[in-house]
Amino acid sequence: MNKIAVFASGNGSNFEALVKAQNNFEAEVSLLIVNKPNAYVIERAKKLGIEFIVLDSNNYESREKYEGALISILEDKGIEYILLAGFMRILTSVIINKFEHRIINIHPSLLPRYPGVAAIKQAFEAGDKETGVTIHYVDQGLDTGEIILQEKVKIEENDTLETLTKRIHELEHKLYPEAVKVVLDKE
Ligand code: GRF
Image (cartoon, rainbow, N blue to C red; front, side, top):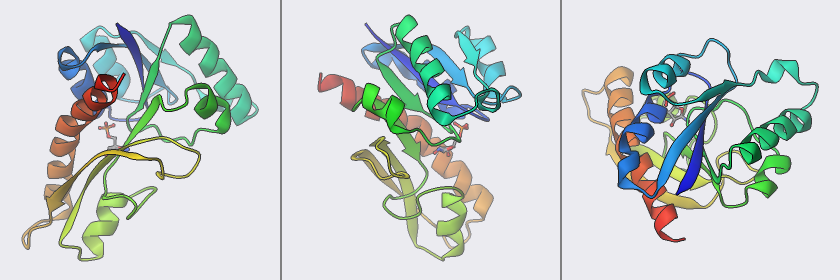
């Protein structure tokens, strides 16, 4: 059974969705890596009974050293796939080369539109008629890797940023487990 680590920095709703959907794919979410000591995702891990490790990047003098520490944890735990779910930190080639084609990210836009932060807000404020969710492999660019799954969300006339955000998150929670299954089925 493949072992998965989820990396998160904040709320963790996608982490929870992945844990709850894991019976649908041939892998087990066995570890949560958090880089922010106060992140709410830690409470979710406790409730769900998933092991978590807080690795605060502020305690490392370089990105490379931080990722070196991450890699030893992941190797020690036998992790094969990394799922980024609201992990607010860009990864370098140190970890990307080690886990080539085995790091996946979720992004709340129709990439290549609106990479980076505040993607839902940017689509909303631009007056776009649609936006969406993209799950992609991670490469060294910002939200540029090969797309695994992408699905659209219509922006309605009466949408507010809040109603649109809610629909995007609902779609994320459905689509991320589906994308993981697509990746694992290719093995
Ligand atoms: C999601 O919108 C995801 O697409 C983006 O960060 C957000 C994380 O939300 N990368 P959550 O922490 O999973 O609730």
